[in-house]
Image (cartoon, rainbow, N blue to C red; front, side, top):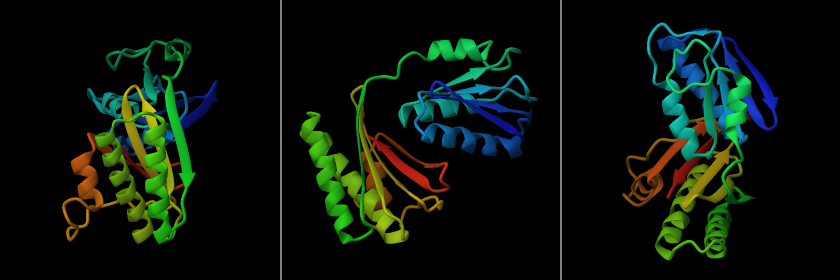
Length: 221
């Protein structure tokens, strides 16, 4: 499957071609997630040259995921009307993007050492204090950040890159590194540690590949 790419006014425009089948579905899904991970204003997918032999929920599923994190809209352009809720032209989709929602955003790169977790916890705690996040949710965010940071420190040689955001009342914590391996829950970990803690405390979480070849693990609270 060939995928053209264009950048216009901080909007990524993808133009996949070929046939969307069981084999190419996963490839296209990953490409859409990677494009959104760059945090553009929006991702526009022009499927006018993509053949869909069967109805698909792929675009709706990805749109829901990237709207949750990193808070990016995904809009589909389909002049043939194969997909519900699509736009008839790229210009029409771009005009519908509008301004990104207001957000408070902070980032910090941490050392891959024992001090990395401590620095990350303090950073998230300070962000929550400055943004007037309620105490219980702030405590959960600090705990989740710690587990994500420690996961990078324990399992990779790379520096964790921490991202904290408050958007529309939703607080998200994300940790990126240059290891492409999808994180997996440690069967031997205690219930409130590791990805088990993230799963219990977050309302949603996931792992997304990045354009650098690594990954970002995010959690919404």
